[in-house]
Length: 99
Image 1 (cartoon, helix red, strand yellow):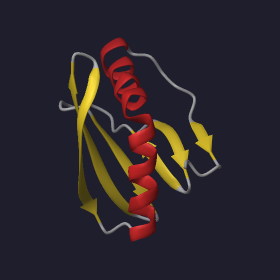
Image 2: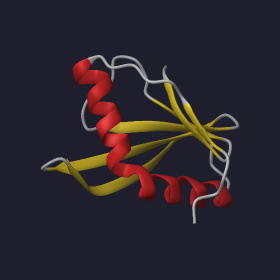
Image 3: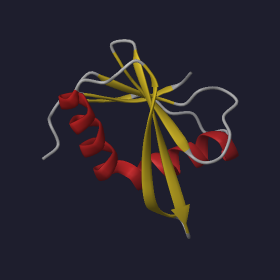
């Protein structure tokens, strides 16, 4: 499970042998939320969030949505590069809050 980002304690990962639609797994203290990115002509047009394991605290859901909103096209591009072009990434840790 390659880690691609860490933001405010939330770890964003791809799970091995993934499938469409494009999605990222976000983990925080044992809870996992899946972020689905719907893309049209290379641009994310819609984002859907689904609780997978446990529950994120409301403040962390806000952090998650802020990060995804600011980085949704980058996340989509990274997913495509990883699964379609076998490009590997060094994880990026972001310690400053996105406004």
